[in-house]
Length: 215
Image (cartoon, rainbow, N blue to C red; front, side, top):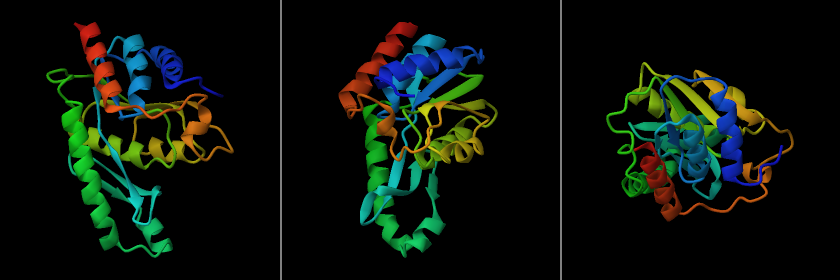
């Protein structure tokens, strides 16, 4: 399955989620790439849209290789087996964690994360990203959401989940909705015809647009 863009993928994901009839949902996007997808999901579900900021923890000498992720409410997820197999010390990762925590805090402030859903009590939480690779950021998001919404049904939804990630994420979610589980892909971007970086300005605009439509 190939998606033309994140917006198109969000429309298809939203239609799939609509058939589940989740009660009183709140849609939380993982920025930045998950926001255009989640914006369409929130529109179709007629639900508030907010963000849940998560950051990948990359290996010290290879930032693209994820060895964990961190999220609000003190969530730090590290693959100790991956560190051991690559002879990476935990101490060397601590500097990366602090750098990513600073960026996480910057994005929370920039996107006013949490303010768009302030006072809203959801019966269903729908966490949305544009794709799942190894599952670290998805799992960190789910663990963080569990801390804030311990009694709420939590759904993780994504247009594409790379091979192996679906089962990992399913262990932390009440349900996972994924439109495509392709074999042979090694990066989420391969599932999209257009996969450009989403800017902070676009994220803020999408959040404000969704908020205005709820009024």
